[in-house]
Length: 226
Image 1: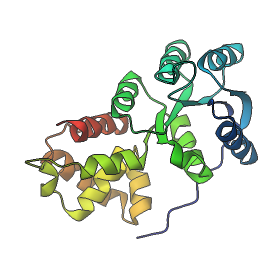
Image 2 (image 1 turned 90 degrees about the vertical axis):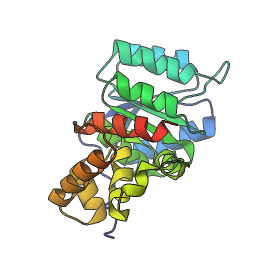
Image 3 (image 1 turned 180 degrees about the vertical axis):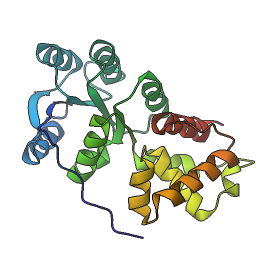
């Protein structure tokens, strides 16, 4: 397998707000993003402060914890929905300590420029930068950990059994939101080969052929179904 390419750096300099009630995590992520070229215009600890900051001067991107004060349930999700409604061009990266497939699918259905990462990954600057740049380009980014859990889930009659090992690799990368070009670079194969694998996968799983973002949603809905 070819080595994974280095994560891209933001260009031009993108304005970003980081929202998390965990001060250490929030400041750590914000500092790392500043170091690699992002313009961190806000560092906040709750949903209302996030919304106020966004409304004061809309950023290009928002990184927000799903669970924030006061109830630590859905505050981050709720404010993200408000931001998406008021500022549809802002890219949103939601982070969580727990897998939340329902939230992921809900936001994929709401539009482009969305990402979901587990908190265990947000301190890896190359992963966060890669996610943010793909979101900035209008793409969808799904944490590989969520994809891995879905792929390993037991099914009585598992349609995935019909896939070859290479097709399973391609399917996992499709579910993460990778483009055909990105998958080709990751696996060290041609983009044409990826296209053939994707067509075969969609056919075997009886999924519709569609554009990159909608195929991510289709695959996640399939993997998350009982």
